[in-house]
Length: 110
Image 1 (cartoon, rainbow, N blue to C red):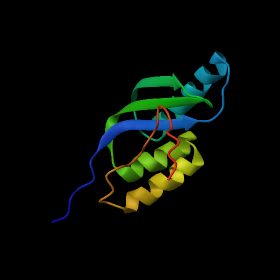
Image 2: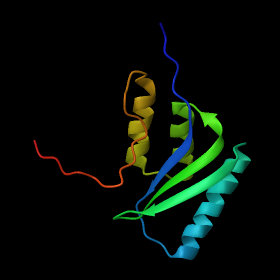
Image 3: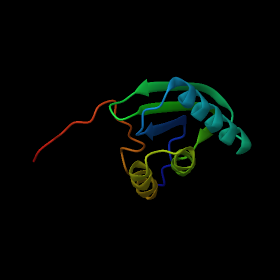
């Protein structure tokens, strides 16, 4: 039995640079314009400061597949390493974890 991808309407973007409030607002505005151009409707944006920059949650009205999420986050400027892993996870339909965005990173030593 094939299990369908769970759908989501939240995009998560990791920005590893600190900028002034005006530049961050401009970045958000351009992300909204890009999503609108691609046919999506943004209904909420949440930004949290991180150690290196910002974590951004962009909520859209449309439900998105894993692949759509990975592609849109890449186009929105998400951390490229994170994008790489998300594209790999798209192919792993059984992967429990997808689109991980840490509020804090744990240093675990084996």
